[in-house]
Amino acid sequence: MVFLEICSSRAGAFAGRPFFFLFRAEALFGLLRQAETQHLIHRARLCRTAPRISHLLFADACIIFGRANANEVGVIRNILEKYEGVSGQKVNLDKSSISFSGGIVDEVKNELAGMLGFSVGRSKTEMFRMLVDRTRKKSKYWKMRFLSGTRIIILIKAVLQSIPSYLMSCFVIPTQICQRLNSVAARFFWGKKQEERRIHWRSWKKLCTSKFEGGLGFQDLCRFN
Image 1 (cartoon, rainbow, N blue to C red):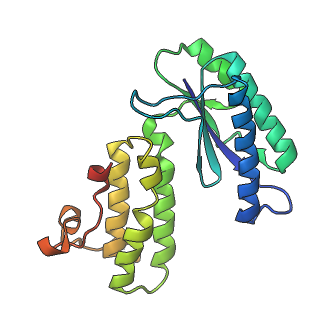
Image 2 (tube, rainbow, N blue to C red; image 1 turned 120 degrees about the vertical axis):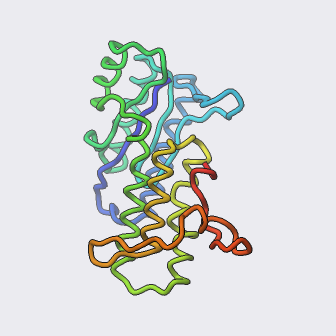
């Protein structure tokens, strides 16, 4: 099984408008579904009880699943080239990568990566680091504003802790990533004084308990995962 993580460089007259980006993304999925119908590519199953999937969309990135052979990778490459020509978007090769399930020899990995011009494989932790980066970026933006304690709690529950929930419904996120996400939320809650960390007067584990137990009802992402 092969995993293609594809990030696009936005281009064209409607690059900054999410509405048109969704139209273009639907065109890509249409090409993938057409290839599936013609049995040119095949969906992957992440575990025995999971449904078969061909792709996942996350913001302006797309993860495509398929079999690790030259025929299917060639079909995916043709689909991406057709998508670039029609949509006005271009695949960002520097940010895109290809990863493989176990049992694939290095020669095959290098051959398939060369067909697409992607870099090969990152560790699972590296693949999901974007969640930490995106969460940290959100929290840094909010720290520039004056927020009440109630608003901080709402932002943590409704935004920061909802960012990884979609991927968690499909994958088991590395514990290290979950711990980093918890740390970002905790630092945002207690705040910073310039670059100096403030004292965390209560452990994050305690804040994740219910209000009846003296906590604030935050989600412990390690347990949720």
